[in-house]
Length: 115
Length: 114
Image (cartoon, rainbow over all chains, first blue to last red; front, side, top):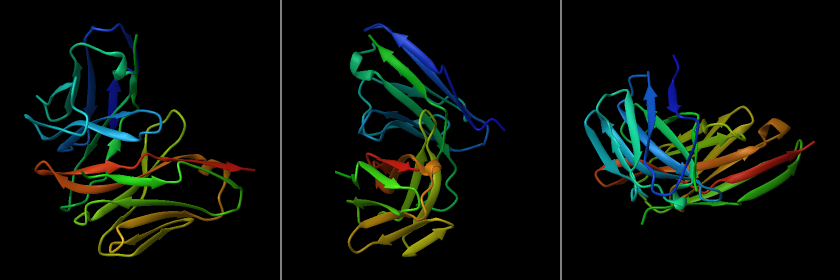
């Protein structure tokens, strides 16, 4: 199993450009998440999905959109990139077996720079 | 709002010493508290977790303690080794917006010196 994969690994954008980050998992997990990681701020939840066709906002959703058309894929879109979106983006997935528990499996990350 | 505070932000120890990282959380209903380790340039990985029905859990050199009354939990690493050097994140599972979500602390950068 590949686990959680992300594409691309690196990307440089100019302000105002758009792009889509792809996350894929082959563990049949129901839940998927997008986080951003900035120095000294830990992992902040952008958007998440509790199943195919459903998405919800996390802590820092502004400037991002997501889609979960297939259970195994979770896409993160930036419509008009801004320098403040320079960050490392992690995707994660989980399959809660017991209410209130949630081991999350992370992808390798995407380093995005917006100039 | 919901949050998790983590201290210290950086920790430097000598090989063989113990290291302790502490976290506090805001939601008294939280019932799951994982710890993740992130090595430089790598993804976060779960190293240990604890649920609210126990006060302590151990796994070899790593232990986690939970005080639900005070709403804080701690990670203890004994006999530290250079390969323990990494950033450690605590997290708490909170119910918000209709779903349970993990809220992470800001992280602790642990350096173990030979």
